[in-house]
Length: 174
Image 1 (cartoon, rainbow, N blue to C red):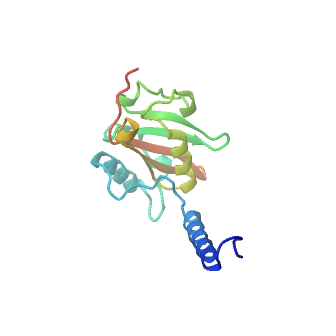
Image 2: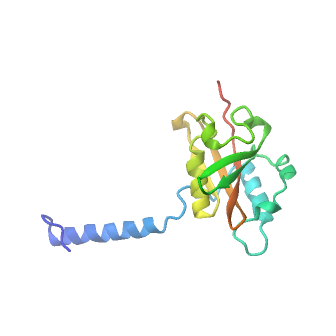
Image 3: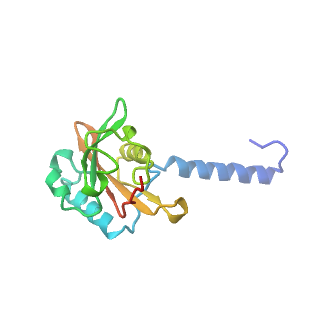
């Protein structure tokens, strides 16, 4: 198919480019891919998550995660339970440094937007859809600087929990 008004070779180039771009976009399963190089705190949490896996499973089971172990993890860990319908995420565990900004038992959509939990619903949804770890990263250009990892846990036939951690918690002025 030619594009009207363009020379044949230019039209073909644009069609090939569009096909290549669409092919790459269709293979994008994870909009928040985990980086190959992580901060030591986040890497420690990812390594902990990897050790929880059984055999060849792609992710650990949520019943293998002992909440007491979270107290010993670096990276200001937190734990979210996930419900599919309606899609909501509830705080089940928060490290001490995060308790000023969220409360246990509250849903993510019930807390005010702040730097530490900005775009958490989007990242949580992407983690569940991709069924693999995700990384959200803010740079100095945003006024904040931190990375947040979310790691899925399987239970009841679906991803039902997300283990989260930060490399650097931003202190709220409010």
